[in-house]
Image (tube, rainbow, N blue to C red):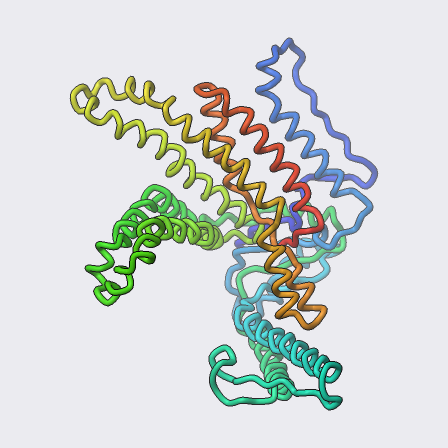
Length: 457
């Protein structure tokens, strides 16, 4: 059987005893200078993390993920045997005393869609009942029953009683959801399963066992596609930015000419339209990279987000850091390079310090604007109070409006690290701005990563 096993919950794959963990982090004796100690710093960090993970495995605190593993790349079961029976018999044979049960992973896309629709109608029903109850207090004793239209976001269609309509929809969706759940369990099984043991030691041992190795060529295809995206993503951005100029829009879309000829609109479009196209493309990029990371076959959301963050970092380094650094210097020195190609490296080295001002301003702006807005939370504060005053009628709606959402990852911080480290030699004045940026970032994220934020995994 071709199985790949993973320990759930990010636990370490180490052997552990019942009493204590003894580690031996000794190295050969000798004299080391400060540079040698700095070079070996990662070894000490690895030993420290290894100790923490081993201690977590043997700690008396019981967590469900310590007893479970994820099994991937399960082949098709033999004829006459279900996938669950296949997994159960396989692990029952290897771990007869500690195997507990298994749960096959299924494709829940349709089930989730029906469930979200059902939950939406439940929220709408609670909202309508709250409005009805409020009308009894503020108006006539019998109250005014809320109504809505059934089509196009409640703007068109037949006008119906909201409470009765939402109750009917809920009663329709409950049996539909139950039927779809049965179909999903029977027909939409993936080649993966969660396997549970009654021993943490067995789960850790099973998680580090590779029963067979399967080379996934699709992953290499994704890597090539990501590389092409990083290198050539700015080409469509430049193309769209060129098309979105007023002159080209008037040629391609003549019916817009009366609109763009207005002085106010023309001034605004000339100033912001190409930049808007750039912002839209860059806003799409993180979600696109997250999609590619999931297409690699990464099993967890946290791992996929970390992989997408790494890809986004490569993009920003290539297109922002290297692009601005080399591009700005290259265009200024292009004529000199044409006359004397051998002087290219000399001219680039001479012109690089001139770009330090750009990146100094960039880091300073990130310091004053980026984390400053994150700390103030002005936009979420305004949105919450608008929702609370005009939209929220139930306690659940108020809690949902107040929920700050996921903190997410910050690949932009990695770009700032790269900029500060590279330009600290050329322009040392960038160091205080970088230090202040990360000091404020530590303060802000330390506050935001505690109770205010909610993880999406």
